[in-house]
Image (cartoon, rainbow, N blue to C red):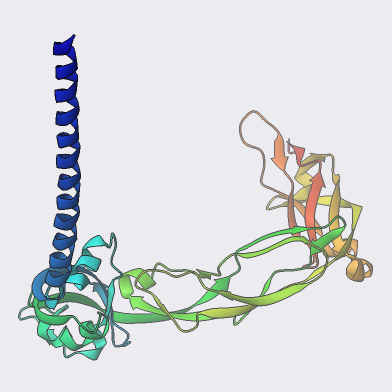
Length: 330
């Protein structure tokens, strides 16, 4: 019994000693971390030289030639700055590109090349410095020379085509084409690119459940390596109530003597929509249905085409869409 009491007393003494040792260790760790943080912050206030990898966006705003190869997409910039500034850059997952308009610098033509030019990187220091924090000093830029490729500028005027996604309330419709002003634009760029451009589209013009005319301003779709004389255009979409009507029209034969063929049927019904304000303008003589050529193969069916119709009607349907054509020549 005495032995058990003695052992228990010894265990209590040792536990208290362990607790005292643990408390001292915690206090020691706290001051170690605190002093380390103070030391680290003190070191961050010092100046350091490091390399930054900066993304670059190169442009050329003059119109005498077209930039077709921007060259380097990143610059390795050696800078001198405070430690906390470096820390901030290290934690950034993505850096904003620095903007360089090389039209602002003297370009040198590369020897033996008609379309390649270069600029010395040192000339860019002052421009880059304005786009970086004021406490960053640029020491060096690598590569020391930036190369670019240009093409002779070629221009022409092309039409502007409206790109639209519109819906209308019941009994309402778009009247005519979407009006664009200006409806043409001068485009400039490498000849190999410009020659293949037939038109330029607007940015999407949208409207839902329209019951009245709309107008506004929209931009033009951007194209790589193409400069445009204007960036924005005005548009107008005329909207009006419509009526739907049907007329019977004869079908004419085109390109073949009509007396030598038989059409079955020889008339068709044409259904159309027209704005109420234009309803009185519609006359049968403004429409023309034709069948072109004789049938080929085993079938005698040929599609009926609407050759002529007034500009103020839309949603035209023909019934029947096909007629039978027989050659009556013996």
